[in-house]
Image (spheres, rainbow, N blue to C red):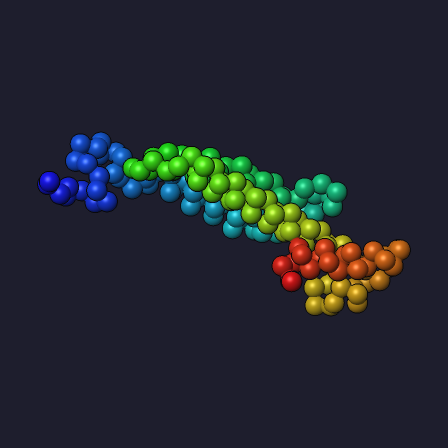
Length: 155
């Protein structure tokens, strides 16, 4: 049995295109990450807050939503070009995990942004914050403590 000289056991007759680094997809993933993820706070700095009331999505939320929609399709396209076929269930599990994680991050980031704009002070404890002190009924404070700790990633 003759050993193949191609990397990862690929056959020699596999089209050259399949063995290439998929520069186009990696470039798209990198570019969309820079624009939609790193550009999010930059856009939020330059656009006036009056354009995005607290009861509507902010510019950063729109960037995050676009990221959550575009990235899974780019990942699927990249996996589709893989020289080895991956189990369909593994592909779906990875994409679903990514989308759920990115969506949870979007919700937490959006809530944190709205809390800050509403006057929430991160350096104070939840009970000492002015917007929580004025909360009626007082039993909601413990719910907000749990909710804010979950959104901020504090156990």
